[in-house]
Length: 252
Image 1 (cartoon, helix red, strand yellow):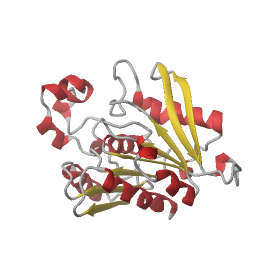
Image 2 (spheres, one colour):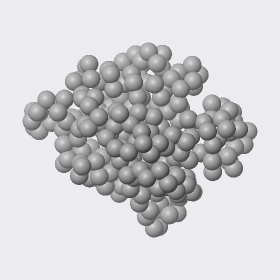
Image 3 (cartoon, one colour):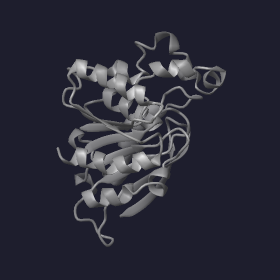
């Protein structure tokens, strides 16, 4: 597996950004053009960065075994949202970055070859990306993700309002804002989009996935939900789930 660190100036973020790519080469050679490999975007959590996938999990080895290209961007504590200090992280993730990687590395943008998954904050970002643009992704995943922001209103104190004003501003319309993933559920638009959502039963954010499941089932979406006993909001759980998500997307 080749691990590539890419630095380039992002128009949407108005700064130089780093992306990590894990590419399944074999003894320094590729078995086929990069355009033929499935591409998986892995989104990190609030207190992490792209390197956490490599440092804290075996995602690279799991990808090599299944012939996947991994794309791991770093987005600070942006919640993958636009309008953060003048920077558009959501547009960067869903539009600019895929276009850049297609031009520079030849990565495919075909729907059937693109997937997106994240943990915690990354699950929130993956949900919004896939549900907003189901024509871009064949499947998506959330591990312990904030896929329904309603429960977060109970934690909306002054510190949260100060750090995440772009989310706090939506509190008054939490049932309609497109920043809340559960509001993006559309049974007709997303009927071909498969989701894998997993959460530990000891996770404080469990209610988010539970509420999302209820809405998902009402819409008849083809999502798979997995709940694991004795697991919390940590890498012990996420490490176990990464190969299961990879199997989910490769099983068709």
